[in-house]
Amino acid sequence: MSDNKVIITIKNNGSIRVEGTNFEIRDAAGGVFNLNGREVVSICRCGASQKQPFCDGSHSACGFKSEVTAFELPPK
Image (cartoon, rainbow, N blue to C red; front, side, top):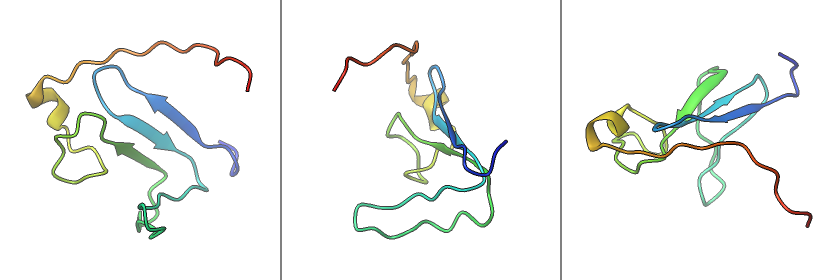
C-alpha cells in the first residue's frame, strides 16, 4: 500500500475500517488519538461500543444492521 493512500471500507452490518500508513483520527476539539502505530483501525457505526469512537464488536450483540453498496455522488 502506498504511504499516501488511505482506504476506508464500510463493512456490512459492522464498522468502518480505516487502513493506511499515514492517517490520523481527531476528536471534535482537534485532539489526536494515539493509535500506537496501528495501520488498521475500525470505527463504530452502531453507537454501542464501549471504546468510542472505535469498534469493540458490540454491533453483533446489539443487532446492528446496515448494508452499503457503493454509488456515485452527484456533482458538487
